[in-house]
Every structure is written in structure tokens, then in C-alpha cells.
Amino acid sequence: MKRKVMVADASSGRSETGARLTLGLAAVLALAAPSGLRAEGTVITSHAITTFGDAPKYPSDFKHLDYVNPDAPKGGEISEATFGTFDSFNPYTQKGRAAALANIAYEEMMVGTADEVGAMYCLICKTIEYPQDKAWVIFHMRPEARFSDGSPMTAEDVAFTYALFRDEGLISFRTVLAEYVESVEVLDDHRIKYVFKPESSPRERIQMAGGLPVMSKAWFEKTGAKLDESRMEPGVGSGPYVLESFDVNQRVIYKRNPDYWGKDLPISIGQNNFDRIRIEYFGDATSALEGLKAGAYTFRNENSSKNWATAYDIPAVEKGWLVKQELKHGNIANGQSFVLNLRREKFQDPRVREAIGLMFNFEWSNESLFYGLYRRINSFWENSELAAQGLPSPEELALLEPLKDQLPPGVLDQEPAMAPVSGERQLDRKNLRKAAALLEAAGWIVGDDGIRRNARGEMLSIEFLEDDPAFDRIVNPFIENLRALGVDATLNRVDPAQYTKRVRPDAANAAASFDFDIITDQFPTGYEPGAGLKQYFGTEGLADVFNTMGLSDPAADALIEKVIAAQSKDEMHVAVKALDRVLRAHRFWVPQWFKDSYTVAYYDMYRHPDPLPPFALGELSFWWYDADRAAALKSAGALN
Image 1 (cartoon, rainbow, N blue to C red):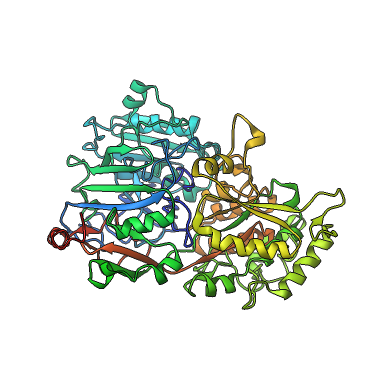
Image 2: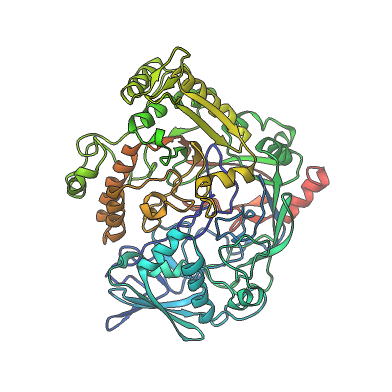
């Protein structure tokens, strides 16, 4: 499971839509000082920062975020489902499998909003102070900030947390920190200064520091806990929710902290509305759906098109107890795909990878399995203006041509690689012939038994590794098509704990690291990508959980640096499109699908702002509980 840049994602597993909670780095302010800033000489003081110098949407005296209900009542419970297992409450390590929402207790110095791209606002800090060249930043912390145990939060805690991530964080994030941060200095109890390395990109410096969670130094020193260990103690944070109870592999319950220090901040008004958040664990997705119908939990973000089309013709919906609703969003597709492990010798030939991709028939799957609900992913920035299209522009060529000796074929003079289009039948004969020619050219020849072998007599065997039974109906037709091609393809469905072990690095046994051929994974990017790209697509991420496919490409590395260094939106867009072309040309993925709406089912005791903000569903944050309606549902027998 993934969480961009800093945090291993603690949300539920993969799905057809693949919706996951991600936290990327926002980018920093350019030279212009937007509204709400006070410039004193060359030093700027502000409550917020934006990427390229635009004025932040919310001024320093804003009362609440536009998309929340400031009068939303507090109370009630919302419950959701996940499946699998957990053995840890530490979301910041790749060891173990963290419980759902295990990072809920922690807050960052600055946070983004759900209706704005590229802006960060003070949360723990009250203001930030920095020069125009962003050589350093001073965070002026709110003196009222408290951890959930009532202890005050100080600059010492911030410095301690930085040192934790620097010394014990994921390898790729430690590398990023080392590239950006020169030193951290505690100025007094509520002021901390980050000094940045001159060679680092100014655009991301401030939010690199502002995006770090803050943890209790006293708790770590008292317990002797480490950031890179799996543990069942959640630690002490400052967030609005704390762990109430758990039953291993059954449920986790978080309760709202009534003494939460930041509850009256403008950025908190109308948020954190539920008294309790309960996560119920199920053995698989099918039992989880039945749990909703039985009232075992109350809110479901449906990720199966088959379920959405067929499974909600039930009395609870007919009676109006259970709401079935589609809610539009503006998110970039999350890059969900079948991911090929480039560490395997058999996948190092791009012709093999292309041939495999030709055998997945999205059009047939969408019509026969998904009820026509999805669109195909082609770009790592699908559903946005950042996706590469057509031939490279002159501006893109200016970045690509110096790398021409390192680029995959076709990047400079062809349109970007697109997912193949198939016909109405499950096995597309045209694509089958094309794939066969590619494999033969790559030295994989069909034998008398119908299986392809190379010159050493080795079979072309491919194992799909899965832990979700709901994917069987999707993977099995893909396997049938591959077997028609002469590939010895199989599906190996394992339990969640074994799956986690096999798809992650193993520090104690390198041979056991990334032990898979093909898995389903995601590559969330964002509207203003930055240093997080190094973890997903850069050579620096090879040893971590993010660079699943094991890509190590100097051209991609160079273009990532161009994205990070971009000082205007136009520069960034050009660099992202060039990078998109290169990544797509490697064909290490077989892109899957996405849809531009949330499909949710929930018991009719929750209310939400209308309209929702473009970049978040926010059911755990800015939705609220209707106590009267909940009582009516219970009286009618809809809920226990």
C-alpha cells in the first residue's frame, strides 16, 4: 500500500476504481507575493503559500472553507468497511500492514484544501516567514497546539520528528530530505527554522518541511519506539481523532477528541464532525458488501461496477433507507494498472511488455464485466491537461532531444503510447497476431505443446499475484488470452499478509524482495507533481514500496528533475508531458480504468455539502450526522 512521499497508505485495498487516500507535496510560492502576505525587506510573512505565485484563495482572515457547512452538527458515528488484515498502527514504515486510517492522529504544519490546487495553509503554524529565494523558512507555531495527551507541542517536537524521518523514514524519502534540507534549528519553544540546500529546487522547499507530520518527542523517548518498526501502539499525535479500541483483523474505532486543540481554527470549522469513525474488516469484498446490506456498517464507496449495476436492487434502497448516489469529482485518474516487474529478466524486453498489454481487452471487459461504467487510462495524468497528446511540442522536444540516446524508441517522433483498442470478442485476433509477432521477434517461440520458450528452453511463464477475489473475473479472461498467445499464465491468489510480504522489499532477504511478476497497483500523480515522482518513477525509489515496477531510467530521472525545478505552470506542464511520454513508452504497465465520479451507498442519516469540492469526497471529514433521521431508521428496523 502506498502513500505519496512520506507515508505508507493506510486506506483500504485496491479496487476496480482504485480510489485511495493520497497526500502529495504541494508546491511552493514563486517570486510574486500574493494577497495576504506581508513583505518586510526581502522577507515574506504569510498564512499560506502557493506554487507559482498566484494569490491563495483564502485570505488570512477567512472564517471557514467554502465547501464546508460551518453549522454542521457534531455527533454520531460513520462506519466503513475494508478487507484483509492488519498487524500495526505505525503507518510510516514498510514493515507490517498498517490498520486503516492509522495516520489519523497526526497533523502537519501546513495542509491543503479540497477546492484548490497548489496551495497550503497554516495549521500547526500560525504564519510562515521566508525570503524570496526560499533559502530558509521559519514556522511560527501556534502556542495553543497540544498533543492528544494534553502535553504542549513545541519546536523541539518538530525537530525531533524531522530527525526521525531523516534517520528512520523510507529510504527514498530520506534521500529526498537529504537533497533539500541543510539544517533544522529550534529558535525558541514555538519557532523552528529550516535551512535548505542551495542546489535544491526552491519550488518545493517550504512544503517539504511543512508537510511533515509532527510527533511527540516525549512519547518516543518514553516508549523507545522507532519509526521504522511495526507496532500496535499508535503513538501520540495532535489530530482531531484518537484510537478508541480495536479487535485485530475485525475492527478499528477512532473517537473524536473533545479537547482537540484546533477545533475552532477557521480551517477546522465544519470538519471532523463525527464522534466516532469505525472501520469493519471483512474476509473479502463480497462479504463486505453483504455487511452493508445487513447494517454492519453504514457507508460504502462502491468500487465494483458489477455491484453498482446489480447488487443494490434491494428493499433498503427501495424504501429509501439506503441512498445510492453518484457524485462527480475532478481528480486525476490514479494510474491503476497491471504492473510488470522489470526486475524479472523476461520483462526487460519492451516487445514482451507490449505483447502482454495487447492481450488485455478493455473494451470487452468494460461492456461484459463493468456495465460500460469506465473509461480507459492512457496517461499517468489521465483526466487532466497534463496528459501528453499528439506529437511532442517544440518545448517538449527541447527537453527530450538532449536525452535522445537514452529515450525509448518513438518518444521523439511519434504520438505517446496508448492503450491498445480491442474488438467486441474477448480474444481480439488482430491484437493476438501483433502480440505473437512481437514475442517471436523477442525470441519467444511456440513449441509443440503450444507454450513459448526462449533459446535456453525456458517457458514464458507469468504469474498474476492477487489478494482480492473480486479481481478473479477480470484477471482470468486476461489469462485466457495470454494462454492463447502461448504464454504460461496463471493466477495466484494469496492472503493479504502474504501479498504484502511478496510485493515489498525485504531488508533481511534481498532475494525475497518484490517477489512477483504482475500485480495490480496505482501511480497517483497530482496536478502539481514534484519530489514524490522520484519515489514512484525515479531510480531513488528502487528500494522502496513506491517504485513497484523497478524502473531505473536516466531519462526519466532527468525529466523528473525538470518537473521539480519548473518555476512556472507552463514550464511544469511541458516537463510533465515530456515525462509522461517517456513513462508510457516503457510499457511497464497495462493501464486499467477510471471513472469521474464517486459511486457511494450509505444509510440515509448522513448529509454533505452540495456541491462537493472538486478534489475530495470527504465523507470522514466534512459530511455530518443527522440524528433525527438516524433515530427514524432505527425505529423502522433499518439499523441495529
